Image (cartoon, rainbow, N blue to C red; front, side, top):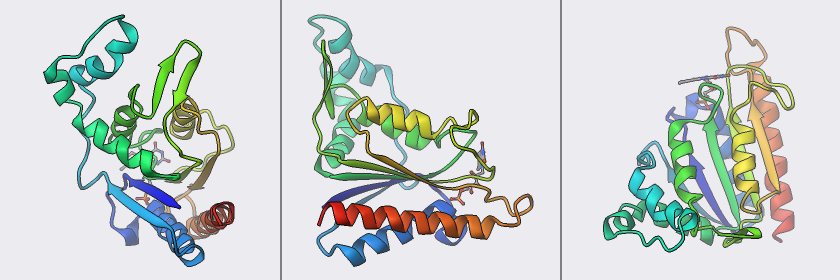
Length: 213
Ligand SMILES: Cc1cc2nc3c(=O)[nH]c(=O)nc-3n(C[C@H](O)[C@H](O)[C@H](O)COP(=O)(O)O)c2cc1C
């Protein structure tokens, strides 16, 4: 079982609810499945650049413009996307860890997704829709936020964006574990909220290990 973990939380572990949830998730996975292979990508250490016009032309123009052949410069600018998509292609499970920032995902996570979801890498665009080119069976989102969010909360610009993007390439088994209410001044129960999220992450880890046993 290969798991790719992509983290976009710059806070140290002791202050980062999302990382603590991730730590619990992975310790549970390792305990239950000794064959689990985990590759970690810390976007805070090597943040992706924003998607450029060269990358757009390299990946999207061949889809949009019949006969378009990318230039060497456009191809050369797309190495990061190829490298990152190769990590995804090796994985059975993708875990994305992040805090909510401005009702969305941190820009580094958004940019990483912009790169790996370029056409031709993890899917081909066909007249019948997207044809997946990966073996991801499950996507897990581990999120933290100050505010409290309800189911399908219209203020949530994070989880639907990621869910929709990955559903587009055929990944529809998605678990979201969310420690919301992590603002101690407003939410006196922030610790128990985090504990509930940690427990939920352990349950997701257990389910995954059962599915892959
Ligand atoms: C730039 C920035 C923007 C934020 N925007 C939001 C927001 O829109 N909604 C929210 O609930 N919390 C927001 N927060 C708070 C974080 O989501 C919250 O502190 C979270 O617990 C941090 O995650 P961590 O404990 O895993 O590091 C923001 C924090 C930062 C630094």
